[in-house]
Amino acid sequence: MRRVNVEAGLRFTGTRVELTPPPGSPLAGYGARGEAVATGRHDPLEAVLLSLRDARPGGERVIWVVLDAVAADGELARAVESAVGAALGCPPESVLVAATHTHSGPAGWIRRIHPAFPETADAAMRAELVRRVATAAAGLAGTEREVRPLVGDGPAPGIGTNRTDPAGPHDASVGVLALVEASGAVAGLLVDHACHATVLGHDNLRWSADWPGAARRSLAGALAAGRPFAEGGGPEPGSDRGPTVAIVQGSSGDASPRFVRRAQSFGEVDRLGGLLAAHALATLLAARPAAGPGPRLVLRRDTVVLPTRPLPSPAEAGRLAAEAEVAWRAVAAAEGQGPHERVARTRWEGAALLARVAEVGLPERVELPVTVVALGDDAWLHVPVELFASLGLGIRAGSPFTRTRVVGYTDGYIGYMADRAAHEAGVYEASASLFDAAAGRRLADASIGLLRRVRAEVQGGPVVTGDDGRRPAGGAS
Image 1 (cartoon, one colour):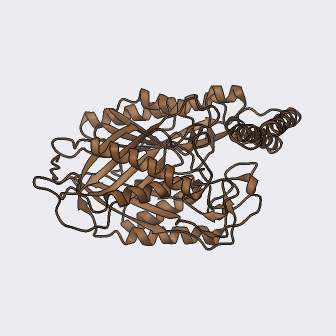
Image 2: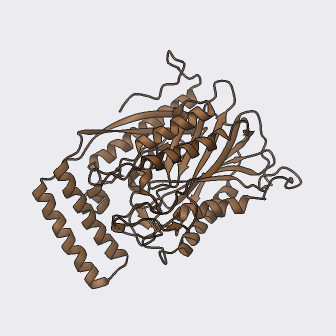
């Protein structure tokens, strides 16, 4: 067995709390559901909190809060950040709020996330979510333990593909960050993978975390009683509570299980979630603890300002939507329901969205929060969009860190960020985006720039602080 030497350095605590609302309110994620409401719960919707703190002098802290929601809009993310920060006595800037992007969660948790969509927010539901997360955070006081991080990435085929063309770009990898106790047990686990949580279709009316929930349960169960990184003679006896496991989305704007799922059923949710868990577990068990003192933890934030897309005239947009509807109906008549019918239908839905946006207009520019968490040679870049695989892979390739993982749906939701090929093809995601192809490239370049600045800081020694003693996040790009 591998030795895990724990020195004063990183401290971890984590928990999860159920958020599932009662039945009777609308679900989010599929326009085809119309006004249908949830009939009950299949599996719990949860918030998972992972807190990692560098206990050395001047050390920093990051708290991931991952919600089983289609998104966490900016207003909701700020409310959660403030509540968790107050509960734990840390700045709200230390808190990152992400969503698993399940399409079987409540519409009432989120504000309108697209100019062409109706308002769906339910103030009471949102307040209850924040209250439950804050209560869970307060319960973490005094529960930190020293840990050693294990970081790895590996292949994760079979969960999804590019959802327009199965041979198209797709990041079929899994990333893991494990926090390992002195006993060799895994106390906390952050796993990222790029695939829409859409195993279940629009006909499902039961609350569900979809495959991310199934993956969480599988991983927690597999690691519950084991001590895979124990020293010497074997595992030590101890709690069988298992690790706190969080699943976050990667560059999944154009990734889904559309071409690999065998059914849109709860059994298939368990199969694909279990498959992702198996890939993550294999990656974890192949990872090696870093030698020497634990790496330094760094969190840096920046803001990227992007112009919105030029819009066609309402007449031109209407014409394009009419053509897309004719094409979809032809595919449906020829092939019936299936992946190709779904692609054609979503092209029409995207064109219809663009036609409505052409009538109401867009703001001139949008601010996107971008955050890097660095741990030694590894980094996690967080963005508030559904990033396309080619853009995410480009960021990973351009990063100066040994490993870089890209996490979407974080600290807000500003829709799809599609690449040039998608805009040229007129796919749903490009039509529904607030941005053109140039914006995606600008976001990728700004993200790489932030990663480079953080890497230089990590390698360069002392951190420069402002007059208030806080570390600067960097200027707007």
